[in-house]
Amino acid sequence: MRDIQALFTPAGEQLVPSEAACSPWGELVGGGPVAGLLARAVERTSNDPDLFIARLTVDLMRPVPANPLSLTAHPLRTGKRLQVSEAVLTVDGKPSARATAQLLRRSDVDGVVPEVPAPFPGPADLPDGHLLPPELGLRWGVHDVIQVRWVEDQRATSTSKVWMRMPVPLIPDEALSPLAQVAVLVDCISAASPVGPIFGPWINTDITLYLHRPFEGEWLGMEIDRDVQPTGIGVANARLYDERGLLGSAHEAVMVNQLG
Image (cartoon, rainbow, N blue to C red):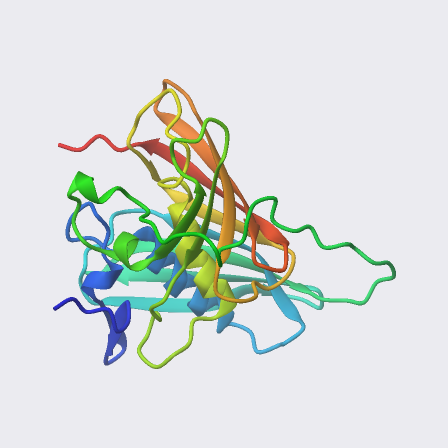
């Protein structure tokens, strides 16, 4: 029976990945769960409710084996209006992923900005689907745990459009924060991108989020494109929505995943 109670289980000062945190590429932790943990860690570097994480960048520096892992986090710079924080994820004594975040101070300004609704149908009336086709026979993992409802899938000729939800917490009995939920899900934008004229498969080596307000609700909407070159390098981009409207964007550097 599969472990889908949480993505990670505490073991002393470390966290142990469950099968639900793993990627389709072997005994490795998926980039989304890694990003979620790093987001959680940088959030804990400040207790000031007026500071908002407007940018989060995650560097996926090396594959993360499904072994007990550790996290450290600290502010790099604190100021009246800006804080910069860093978190590092370490496995088997090696730093394997790092996040830096900019926390900006909210302020009241004059004017009204209209909401920008998602330019595609909401998730309520869409059927459940899969991030990756089951017929590929890939290893079960986080890509199967994420709930996916497509508007236009990877066969789209311009942009793919999808709603996603993470139904499982990072840690047992601890609700996902809005930022951690977004961080887990946006790792999927490369896999959810239109296939395009050059078949990879493509994997991302980083994740950068820009947010102008907190994510609300449970379903994250994404309108995705990917620009790639015959050099085997490209960029995946997504406009991010919740059911209220636009909340930011996400970007990933991608490269061809040549296995074997």
